[in-house]
Image (cartoon, rainbow, N blue to C red):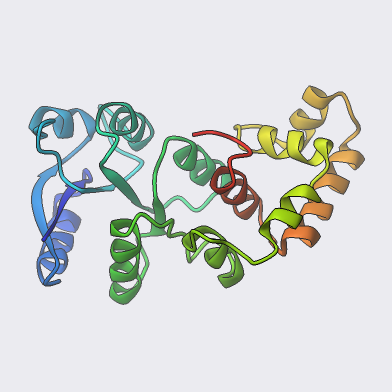
Length: 216
């Protein structure tokens, strides 16, 4: 069975999630924590949980810090974010901190189970935030048949834009960093949307991470 740790400051929600997870035959809850600090105090680093279900907005030590700690200290542990935050910056920051999945707390139980299964199998899961076509990009190790040609078709300017896109910066700030106009940035974005058949900033970030354009 796959062990799961729950890290969320809402005790009632944790209780409900624990019951749901334990109802799945292949998963079991190892322990619960109300924030990142409590998680660190409870976790056995020699035998850590295989998956951490992590909230972002928590007191004492939030999800951003906790995900980064897990990335550095427990590299074999996979993190699935379950949050109310749906903005691009939160998602991108968590992806850069090494999480394997990101779903919203309003998700249905069957979506939650799909996310657990995907993260267990070392796949990304962000189904509520990107189009189905992108999910195929990030969950299939082989990728599309013309993956090499797609990567070769990305210009140096577009690749540089992708690297900046993965940071907590607006399009205007990226333009300033690259010493180009905002119109040029818009052009890079639109060209990548067309080339990669992706329609969101989050989708571009996931693509960049998956294909090694940026490291996490």
